[in-house]
Length: 151
Image 1: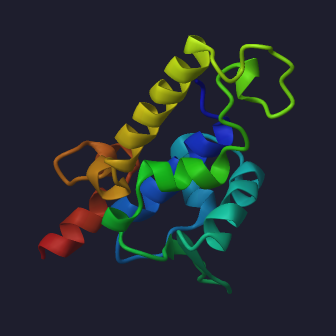
Image 2: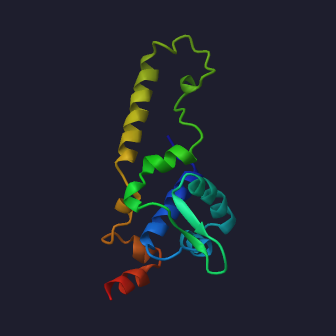
Image 3: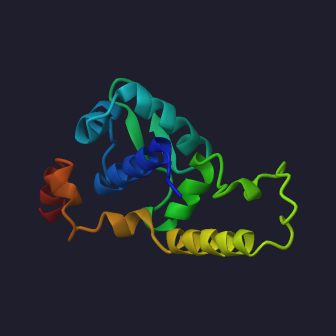
């Protein structure tokens, strides 16, 4: 299974906001950190706002921030709202004409594998991806946040 770019960058937006805790994150800063277009990030932002992961603040000094604690957002939560389809094979589709659909060992194995994939994602939070011990803060250019909080 391969996650879409939308899911990948949705997770990255959330990671950036978590690493930048206590401050508003601006889309141009996030786009620069990940070397991706602002327009692309704005498109991805919409489902994150709609599902309560991110809150936006309008205005000249506006930006985005997490709408709930980073430890309350799992990768499964994000994948569930950003991915359109979890079909691992044709037999997952509701309109499949495979005569083995109800008794196929492959279908059962793939469903169990998908369930295990979801279980792992449900055990990983955005907070766990952005712990201070990781290099995320430095790599995203957010060292200033750590220095300010240490003062």
